[in-house]
Image 1 (cartoon, rainbow, N blue to C red):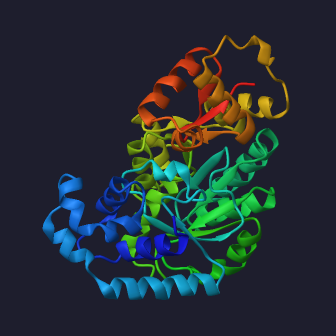
Image 2 (cartoon, one colour; image 1 turned 90 degrees about the vertical axis):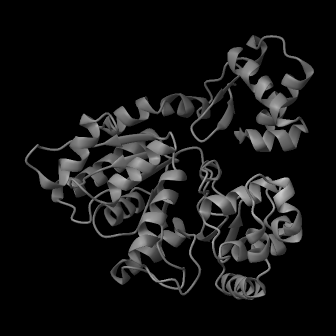
Image 3 (cartoon, helix red, strand yellow; image 1 turned 135 degrees about the vertical axis):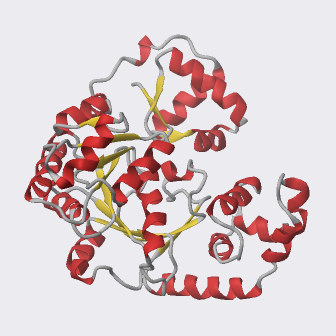
Length: 374
């Protein structure tokens, strides 16, 4: 696949009037993961994809979108910004599973967006000392228990920025998801932290340069925060707020959600207490509780080398042994990657992985990653 062409076409697809996030992803997925093929075979779309109207074909004939896309790609190249398309290996695999995932993301930094453990921490913009202390203590303790966690938030005032700073203080990678293009930092008072994050995480956005941080962009941004993480952690929230929207989105993605409780009289614990009361979030008291709930202790033990002897594995078929060999060589992979590596159809791969899981040879992790139980 031509990376340059795929980037240009992915960016252009976001600029086509009348095609939102969900339809853009449907079109790309329907054409085998290629935005370039959406444009290349646009006249064939109605016959190949149910629900595609001829108006979509007409809309895709949009030279000005291609021109703007080329300008944005040039901006990204000049500023050493990575253009991540749905088909690319560096695209956040957990986010790719979501129906409304962006068809293109722009990333500047050095974080692995597909690392084994990813959380997001969100909350009120009016963080209290209690909330700030929770950020600091939780991430300090989490670092000791699970040192490879990536911490995601939105670089906003309050809990967001304190989560980023606590992550940096504990030498954890941290990524800020922005509600505007990478030609600016908003709020500007967080610029120093944002610069530090480029060396220990990064900045991520779906928005093109020149995009203002308008209110509706923050809601759109929240789905990326929720979708790229294994779990959402709400630290403090009033009865209404963006963090509750993020929690709802995480629930719709079938991701874990946790909330720190507060006193019933505390305004900025009301939202957290409601999430817990309504069974929309698990009560969170400590990093140890969180790691246990996520079963991450087991992951850490494997990484330290407490391995099950390979001889204890039951007899495997040739295809099962092939999957084991791939996972042994490359580490944790999603089913799409296994399909490509093993050259086995996805429906058959599902059956093989189910058998391996039942035999105790592999297990599925959050984000759909398959792990070999060594």
